[in-house]
Image (cartoon, rainbow, N blue to C red; front, side, top):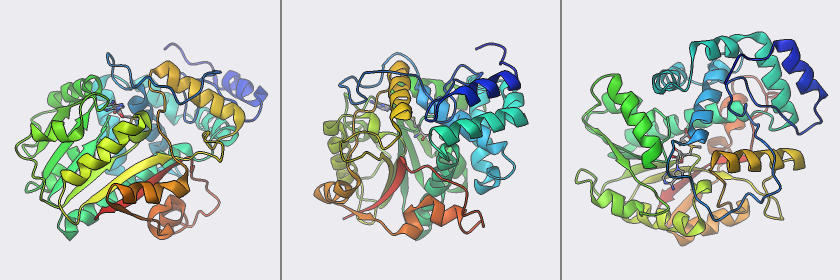
Length: 349
Ligand SMILES: C[S@@+](CC[C@H](N)C(=O)[O-])C[C@H]1O[C@@H](n2cnc3c(N)ncnc32)[C@H](O)[C@@H]1O
């Protein structure tokens, strides 16, 4: 943390960088789409550090707040999604008024846009749109009759907090790593009484299965149609934990349930589908944050993988392609949406 460098200095450094290269932001966090550098592979056997709250969860939140300050892109994401994220970040102390002033400044927007262009074009928008996607899909599932919503690896996401008061008859559950959840729990409790239908479970999914965790929560009923969300989570788990997660979701939800998650794209060699330098930086940033990616799968293998676990994946572009679903109808076909992390919808069979 510290005084942000001047706009000109930042812009000059950004311009001097090669393509697929990036800088840290003035908050001390990697900027949208940027991290540091490494020679170590992204797939390691070490899961998330256990002693501090997730830095990637904070990064997601800051990118949403930055997006909310962009006059053209911000309106693509509903205001309540943006403002609830800003509120929790301020509450946990991960967003400061001076940072908001930086996010609002034109030079910073130009800088981030320039960096995104060189690294992961449309990354902040992708994060904002997938929040909209999760919100839309959850609301639609509730309208179709789902009775429970489970958000796993919730981070600072506020979907349950937004929907619980609107749907007092629905059970909402958030599961997250205890270190991350402790931070959020404290912040939520400081804002007032939590809705009585919102339950928080602190669980390290590398050590405890989701099924074991839910078995300790009497309000959760395995036979009911439910929505289960794992946004930006599964890539941080080892494959055996991903399998255990899918088995648990299948056993802990009723027919007609919906599974929503995001997945990392890789190339034919099994590497992140990013330019060489960007991949290097993403990997190193995650390693430094203590949150390396542990699982990814070729996109073509995802459908059979889910089928083996009892889920039917829907690949309808109008539903799962964020650009087609949200950006083209808004009349902005030229605006990019990153694809290296993409949303997945699957019905429990
Ligand atoms: C990138 S953040 C995503 C947060 C949120 N889903 C979102 O998209 O805004 C990753 C989340 O996964 C959680 N996570 C990572 N490893 C975990 C584990 N072993 N058990 C439980 N949660 C874990 C972190 O605590 C963090 O909240």
